[in-house]
Length: 331
Image (cartoon, rainbow, N blue to C red; front, side, top):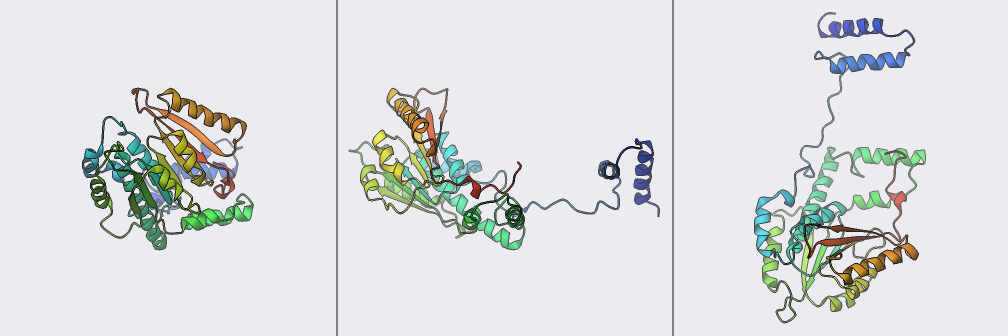
């Protein structure tokens, strides 16, 4: 017949006549397809529409509190220039939201407290919406328990490129309901940065989502760090530990509680005085000589500051099994 189909066919036929005779058939076919795609006139064999990217799923590029002007204005009163955590807040928010820890502990309430709580609320709400999208069949294909994810896992298991137990996909299918513990003495006598516990409780309540989609819980504990650590339930691993104003003794008290399967610990202000810097070197020496497979470590520095200018991230991996996450033999 005539029309678009004939136009495309003629273009392809003329191009084939100009091609070298030694080109294999598969190359010719690919060449025809490329012509049809680049042509303003569509060919008959280009029939599949572009993949839908789940337009209703909340986890897109510009969602979350880091882009919420109202949230930033509401927490501004909790910021202190002396603590210089205006960049630590967004950093920790992103880490909590992306790693989705189940149990989070912050030692030392402050500006970062509200970022952590909001990250937990946002991540829980996102997880709930993902579960709905999966049931609806339009979830992002990168999720473990999406239709594509399940197919990839099945194929990798059959091909022998996945040797995990399936624990990670099973955990991904569970409801995400994190708990955040904020520990501070809230006392003028003890020189706490923030003494008004009621103000924090009010702000944290305002951060909670209006709907019941998210299952996150945030709890304030007016306690001494040492006493709280002594009473910690040793059967509950800490997935994310933020030591705001850490010291050596507190680290070694809480470090055994951090999950050995990828638990994250962040130490604040580690590179701006001799004592803290020496402690980081102590950890690196331990890593190099005794605990190479115990934890990973990296320090970040804000070079424009001389005080409160750094943090060190540790990830405990003594029981982390990389095979649980790898399903393909290529990037």
